[in-house]
Amino acid sequence: MNQQEYEKATGKKYATNAYLVTMRKHSSTFINRVGRKLVKSAAIETVISSSASRRLLGSFTGSLNEVIFILISGMLAVVVIYNLTNINVAERIRELSTIKVLGFYDNETTMYIYRETIILSGLGIIVGFGFGWWLHHFIITSLPPDVAMFDPNMYPMNFVFSALIPAMITAALAIVVHQKIKRINMLDALSSID
Image (cartoon, rainbow, N blue to C red; front, side, top):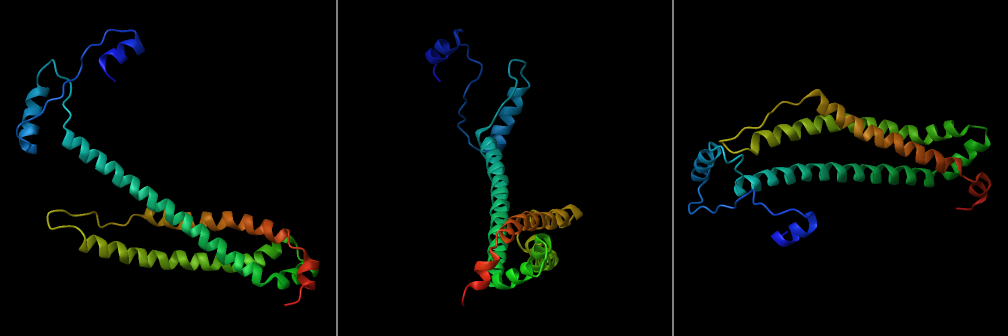
């Protein structure tokens, strides 16, 4: 926003409160030394380096990438579990209809089909703990350069969140599958010819 637009929008006189200083030397040590000298002055409150701002923005976007990867992996888990359960229900529609005709309640019918998904999700979580620990160890030992070191520890909360996310997805999809199984038309399923 330029000076005229500011005065028109706020109705106040424009007063400069910041300066853009361009250095002849672009080394970070020189910029930091000049910045420390400027901050010592009572007239200057803060000094912001554009290279430091770029680094900060880079770390924010790096964190955002991690969040995006977690969201994508969660959506992938939803798609895989939903499709596997959907295929399981579609292939066993006659069996489910027979069970419903025999007098099983909707909850029992859902658990009949969904028990496999729960067991497979549990096994996947356990195998994921082992594979995840191995992958973490491999990345931590091979990725960092000699001048840097990452924290090699795995904390209990890492495992808790790693188990909680797929467990919540499995539980949420159980509700969707339950609604689908409740709507099975027993007569149509049993009378259809393969």
